[in-house]
Figure: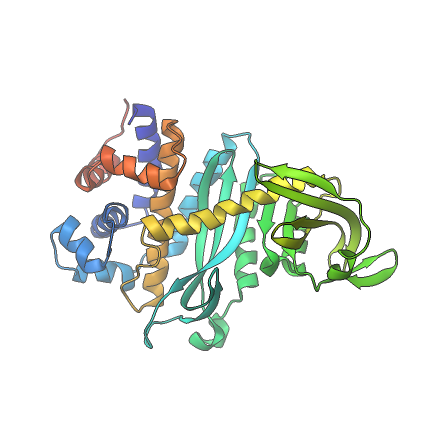
Length: 376
């Protein structure tokens, strides 16, 4: 690891350590190291045994009962992303999505049935957001969603309400025009109008049964796909080809938008944007970037134990996910700063494990970050 990237990673981690008290710092570093280095079965007991040489009671208390708040972690994360973004003039994209976390057990707080890639999944669910700054991809936040039946009425927040809070947190960045990508679940008027108010750009998938006005007539999107349209062919790579038509329509409660009808081997899909000058190719290339949040879900589940929550507490699950965010962003940022640019997160974390042992990592953070500055 070169000295400049070491300094930058040190500064990145230092801000998180400042959130915790001294006793909490030890548990935080141990848990973070466990998520990164233990490849399978990252239980609290196993992390405490392998990396702390202690009983698991203290680490369990740190995650479940300790008074630190995930909001403070995310505030620091947002500040770091703002700093990185201000130093980079490249395009900035925010993507919203959600992902289930399979869990079984009647006493696990927050469980319910959620839509996943393979159908309905019983377990927990999280609304996720990913920032793409040039070629750097960093998690903005992972916010747990609880079904109505599992929380008090005054505590319930729908996925749309959570998404609005995530977007509101991004306002302080002061970036414009920020592009926001969403699937059809989040393409509702409340979210679209909020994005318009910030002078940002939205590009959202939209369901085929949505009603729009065109030429003074109300119609369903599925009917528009049946008429004669001028389609342009857009190639994305060697094998992906799309036939795309566009037209201006009026979306109720939102206003005038540009509608894209996209046909491919996977069927017909519809997309809308408030950028009325967007071309067919720009739409295809921009929306293809939404794929990275799906990739991120696979990476945190496969390499950082996103779904390995060995506790029943809802608060503990949120703290676990916050630690996953820090672990993911630290390794991703390291790859970016080292300019090694490994193509996959799997390759990156493998090299990280080769460069550091967990003991070296903990010593670096607890000694160098807290007591000295790294000056190369």
